[in-house]
Image (cartoon, rainbow, N blue to C red; front, top):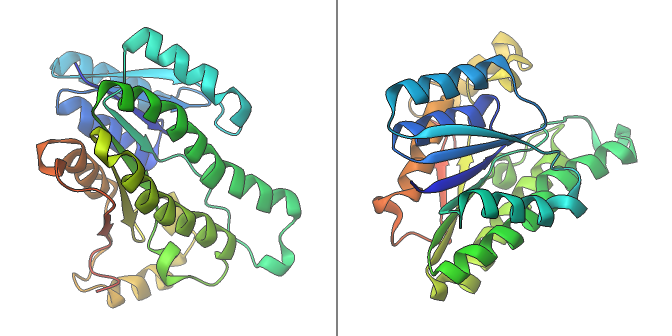
Length: 244
């Protein structure tokens, strides 16, 4: 069974990705600081179906210095990973002029530094195996911008540059690297926009609806599967046509 590491896999987009991958026959290794009822239920559901599985491994991804040891432990337990989905991240908003330095540093540490270091250690195993898939979860904010999300936007833009450059580094060794850029979705984050804000986003979208977490999960599964065999260095936008 192919193993895929999914960071931030206990809720939201990460949990949807873990569910979809397990249904497709993968072992989804959900990495998060703590387990919750939703993740336990998803794991039990996957076990009942019997196609793939969801396993939880606790880790605080802000502890960047410990990532190497953590990845070595996963490799010893599950073998060389087929895939890595860098999904974990903070969505902290706020005007730059008012943001505390600690908030800025926390966003950059978890949204940019952590996935880069995580990929460093996971990609080594993929390169040795001569195959593997890396998917970075970015955001349309990384290319369009949004008032009050300047630091968040900077971290998501950094993943796009990282994706394109790394794809060239490891492609000759059989490893693909792509990014998925979701738009505003039906999640906890869009609840903060309020009804008027959500309606405005919907009116701007070609399909007149918000994307859902399952849409992002299906795109990730596509990139990890046979369909993504010759796709690398790409940014796949899932936003209902908001940026069309």
